[in-house]
Length: 637
Image (tube, rainbow, N blue to C red; front, side):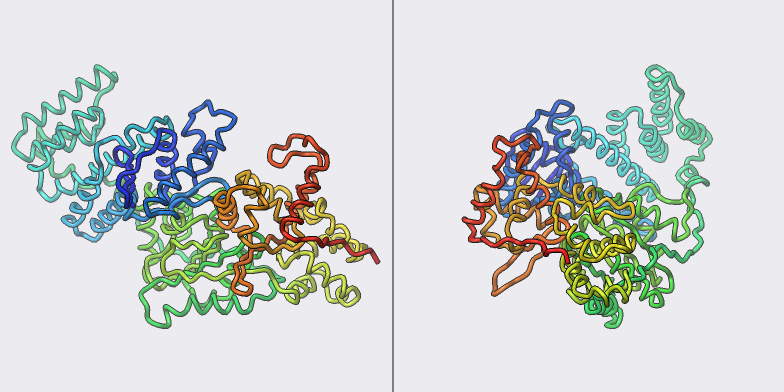
């Protein structure tokens, strides 16, 4: 598959050029402008309808995405578009999207220039610019937002052209530049840097009069249309041409020379947690994966991805391991929270913070992401630094934050497995087992209380479904109410309508946390969670989704895929069959909503027409799927 945005929008697959109607063009363009990153449904709505979206806008966007996905599937890319809780992401490499190829070639050209290889750098920048099919990206896509982003891309193209021209002027290749520069100046008459380079090229070619004429034409244009004199660079260049001293003007200004960087040892890890419990096998596997490339003499960087659904303790585990390995990374540890799919952190902002921790003054931090990445990797070269990237949204977000050499190692936590990170070791984290859950509660509430209420402590651990967050919050409730028996808290937690509220403690609002994830899901995915939560057994198989939702098989699979992409379900194999599980806090939240469905509609929040609607649905679901048992709370002692 080959996507093109550096000019008119094009998608070419195994079946040839794909054609999309205007609305789908806008949605596809927005996804391609932010490849491998989540584009929210709200942003897609803004792109399609500008400021006047209809009430059904979000549903229409989902219909557009489904149509695009079908077209890409028919052309050999069924997995191109991934559904995330808050929107959609199109997965592309630089071999599939001209924008990514352009970025990669430009970054490579800059690295070559920094290595003192200007001829190779010029060739690389030239190849990058040849990817453009005209000066206007996404020409013909009728969207104000798309065109606004396209304007920024066009500006970037001009900046790269100026870099390319500078390199070739320093190589003495001014004769080949004058024609193209003259056209660019005509098309961009107020771009002073291009006009200056044309003047230099003309002067170097023995055309001093034409160089001065180019300045005077520009000055008249500036004065007549803007009421301004040309900038300092053009005025200085005019004087230099008259004096015959143009060569010096291509040397860097004093203020742009590199600022010396003082090596610093960053210590950005959060504090380790005092009651960390269990995970011995997983800790050993992570440490082995971090050490193996170094022990084998490999030149590859060690990357370990710890993947699992929310609230299983991924961050706590990564921080605990990083502290335990402190002695193996004497040059420091870097840590960043990447915000997940709901609020992904900007990689450029993270790099600016890392560079500051590595001793780079703020004024010396480069503007572009590529240049920040280059400086970051250069500073880490040969140093033993452990980088911890928490709650990554995707591989594209992580890639610029990876060191370049084998002396560093990286731990990434994510709700998904990040297949785009080639060479990474991916390890899944699951719930704590029953004994580990009891051990964590014991550390938190004290051995004496566990000894006197051992059976109830075990039941409380089971209620928390092995989620370290729920276990710690439950322990916090018991410690804050020392007069409560453990059985009293168990009875409170058995009520699905109160469980999250009961566990909200110490300023942590669990209802708000889970609701943020919930709001990022499509209506069909929400409905699937509600329907699955009604089942007495938290385990279910993929075939059950269509009858539960009473929709077509493909639509049901899309909803299941969305939940899996969001990292909200556990997956295991039983007797050769894939089984999914909805557990813990999210299951309690979904069951709470089911309990409220007797008076509110399934998706809109409007009052239901029949008060017993959800009860009828539950009876039908059980009859259809053969589930008849129910779970009741224990009687208080």
